Amino acid sequence: MKTKKGFKSGNLRRGIYLLPNLFTSLNLFCGFYAVIAAIDGKFLPAAISIVIAGVFDNLDGKIARATGSTSKFGVEYDSLADVISFGIAPGVMMYLWALKPFGRIGWLAAFLFMACGALRLARFNTQVGTIDSDYFVGLPIPAGAGMSAATVLIFHKLNIGGDAYPVLILIMLYVLSFLMVSSIKYNSFKKLGLFRKMNFNALVAALLIIIFVASQPSIALFLCGAIYVLSGPVTTWRHHKEVKRKEAENLERTEQSSHPF
Image 1 (cartoon, helix red, strand yellow):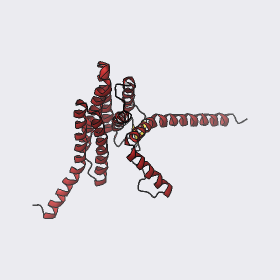
Image 2: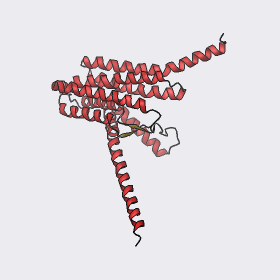
Image 3: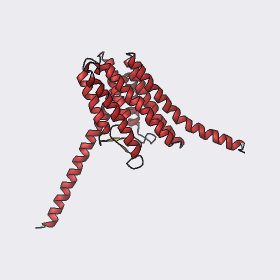
Image 4: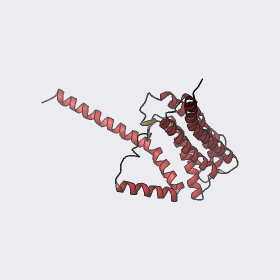
């Protein structure tokens, strides 16, 4: 027979496990609504819903780790929700918004985006605990979906329709698809020292960034998304360049040691 204390402890434990999965469900809800909104031709609400889904997706993981309530069920549920919110939703949205005139090529591009996102999630789940958690291998699917949503938002901000530059949108979707399944490393920002002491100038800079995001959210989201998407290839290129430089230096030292005179 359970004691009153044990009963409360069990309820608390179940409540803790419920919390991150609740945020995952909110992520899933936003993704499903984005699909419905895109079908109805409401592309701005669809893009906003995908962005909000990204916020919930980020929170569920942080809450699970902070409360020690991570579980295999939560990981699998999160991945399934991500396929809907960041694979199907942006794929449908981008097809109906800009790629429909291309016909088969358009919906195949949307399908490729969704498929590459699903492959990216499957690969991530198999690599958990075996690779450096400081980096993601390949562009994370929420970032790819966020870039798609940010493109819709910036076009709406500039009063430009999706049919104005369909070729550009098609190329962007193919590039994002490739980056998700590539071996390019992206910073995970899991060890950011947000709660460490900072000097006054850093605090002022942070406040200015917050003001800019609040005043021009569409532009800010697009710039942040573009910078993050490009950061992977740039960082990888610099890393390879550094590795080649060190190899050349080591080879030169070896040759000098073998021929001292």
